[in-house]
Length: 118
Image (cartoon, rainbow, N blue to C red):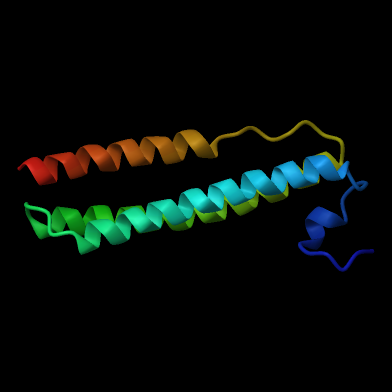
């Protein structure tokens, strides 16, 4: 029994090599930094007075903030799934977060480009 949380992660299997757990933690923190960077972009978009209609810019702002929150949640879930797989000596889960975030950012950039140019 352990006092570490989440228990559904730490009570599974055996303790992995600390290097692997620390690498998993660094990846989690990199995704958290990505989430913070997306939030900073949303704040910058809100602060700058760009030409164009306000409505579509507000939509992009909300989408960016939603993406930042989603990225933070996905990073924690990814960390937990990888840590649990390592403890149970199972194959690591598929890496699906990056393409989703990249596609969402590309789509928002295209929309924002049309808003600024229009």
